[in-house]
Length: 236
Image 1: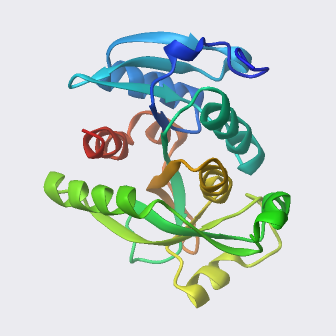
Image 2: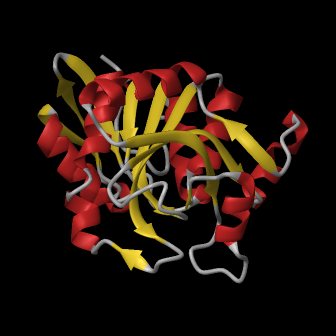
């Protein structure tokens, strides 16, 4: 089914590796900053996708929107209809301690969630709890971050369905040694596993939840370039 209801590109316009920020404007920024000859291949609902090359390697940079349902939809179509092999999410994450300073990177080796998205995969044996990233991608990301001299942590993250919640996500993170809270990782990891494909979440710490410290939206949109560079470099 190409084009899909949500992606207007032809199959040959999507690369095998997709770098996936949440914000469509961040997708545009990443494409214009890193890709040679980026071409807009999707703009359905303003969810921008660009394809071009980085150091001779072909990539697509495409937004996911916010939350498990949104990234779940786009990653499912990319994996299953466009034959994408690898999706690397590059987004923001809320830190829960001084262990992860603002603007540092977190590589999510596993994502924990109680999201209802997990229930869609009950027949596959998945229940509330942890879903793993691709081990090879995780190792490559850490090695590349080390080589590039980026400040980073590798560990488990929380993927929440809610930005505003009555639940004490910080307490859950600290109790389970989770590095921070984002909203897309579990859906991406589940879709990758079901399709037999690869996925990884790389995030920049945009705020410290307990301290109430948060970077401005413009900084989130334009300032998080290290994680994008890491995503490109680790795939060369």
